[in-house]
Length: 379
Ligand code: SF4
Image 1 (cartoon, rainbow, N blue to C red):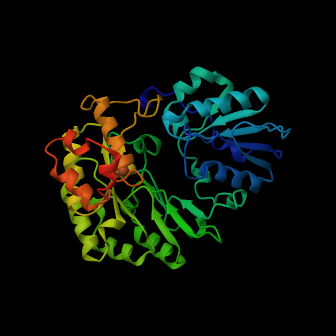
Image 2: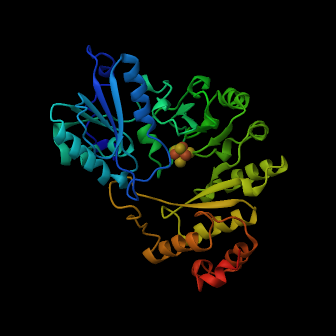
Image 3: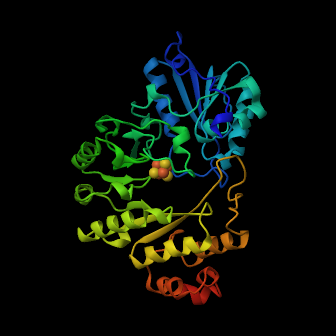
């Protein structure tokens, strides 16, 4: 998809060079089931910090609202490619409301689907592709969202791997790591959330872990840890952190061995399986049987599996993509089982759940639900 993209029209150097104070409007599309996130818009908060340093006036809003602020520049963020409609809604609204203002759209959808955005808005918008390197080392303007108590940060960008289903190689093609993250932790926050795609690939991971440990704060390696890089040294460092959940991934059969070794290592240090959540990609190149086999392995290993349905990188409805190896009915069976016999969408290694999935002869048998009553008693 990147090969057909028009080049970004947003010059990142320009944002620091404007002479007069600006009125800057920062827009997050309206949150709803169509635009769902549990996190604040980090990119907008970094832009806010940057513009405040310049002496500009800033305003952060969600959805559409016009109250006479009259901005010169409007930044609009975006999330996953399937959540494009709420983005178009705010681009349309603000583009019409403030005809003289620059409208700059960034974020995942804007970066990956530039042609799609251009088809609707032409030259009315500028597109900011990927990360703005000049802003990445700034402490986000958390003072704009005082109710939020976690510092979200990246100690590295990009990834050393090139998984075909993943947008990271397109969004952040170069792997780059920073040595320290202390300056990105906001005073008074209770938790540190690292959004690194692959922190263990960083030559500085040990220093980053040590810095987090020194804060005494809870930590979440939110995007998961690469089991292939989870050595004894890493496991010992993890053990010293205040980390309620360790996230790993089992996206294909190819990583079975390193994953099993990583889980054994964590278990040997006293980290229980219920604290280990393993993301399990499906609806991609796998088959339902392959998915079931991975799920069975995870249940046998006593860890929590979290099925992750593959979503196409092109704009389209959520769950619109169906792999040639899957049927709509099979995908619905997994979705329903996650709701009914799972816990928060995950499959913990409950005894009843293990009996059902491990004892099934086929995929259909594993995911067939008879009555809610019978199945809820499995827990
Ligand atoms: S290891 Fe993770 S972040 Fe890296 S390319 Fe694969 S899925 Fe993406």
